[in-house]
Amino acid sequence: MSHGPVVCGVDFSDRSRSALAAAIAFAARLKAPVLAVSAIDELLAHAADAQYGPGQLIADTRRDLEAFVSGSAAKVGVAVDVRVATGPAAKVICEAADAAHATCIVVGSRGHGPAKRFWFGSTTSRVLVSTKVPVLAVSGAPDVTTDAAPLAFDHIVCGVDFQPPSRAAAERAATLGRDLKVPVTLVTGVASPAGPPSVRDAIRATAADLSDRAKTQLDQLAAALPGPPATRVMIGGAADVLLDAVEGSGRALLVVGIGGGTTHRPGSTATKLLTHGGVPVLAVPARG
Image (cartoon, rainbow, N blue to C red; front, side, top):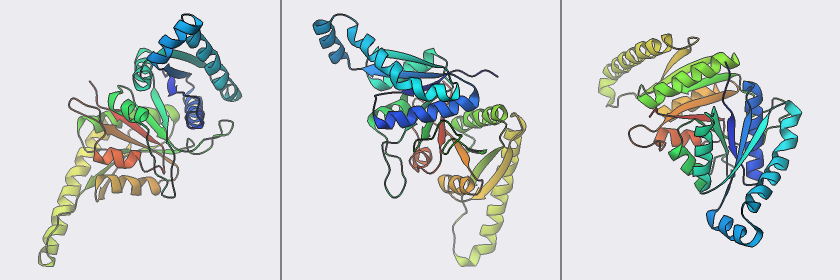
């Protein structure tokens, strides 16, 4: 199956260089091209047009962008195209991804402390809210000449809560697993009912019943997907069980759904997973 380009926004910072390296590494696995996108502030563009001539700043930025991306991609044989446009960065990136029918947009962390958590800048946050294509959030700077972490995942874990965003995520995870020939596991969390010790047996029976029902639903969903994926029901909150599942499955890619309704804004579970920083996370927006 052919894949659309992997899109990466570039502002020429070290952070965008790391994100670009991740985009190239992911594209190499997919045998897909990379589209590097750079945005120019509209006021700056108007001022530059007046001083240096129409289009000169865009031409200069395009030349700089081509130089910025050329070396890394050539090492692994990934084709890279570039696009420079004026406007807010998130808008330029999302429009480029839509027009190119992109496989995903790659974003990097703004930096992480001892807790190894992502800190997203305003552009990344706006991309997550506005995007119609999946967003791959990564930390660190992989060596694109080796298949190094964090892109050397050998398993895909997908969170499912049976809402439309997570169903879209499950379909994307299963398709990606098929194309990359890596196993996929759909995981759902079941909250254990709370109660006093005197009703402990009833609580256990209720939890078992909820787990059985969730397993049936999960198996039905998996049966309709490529693979089909394995399924797993775990007791606990959604974010916690997914992180536990990832930690127990080796080097994993975590796939989650975002949005629903009139917005793609990540919910509390997706936000916790996206900011965890320990594993790469593919955030898949709800359709439409």
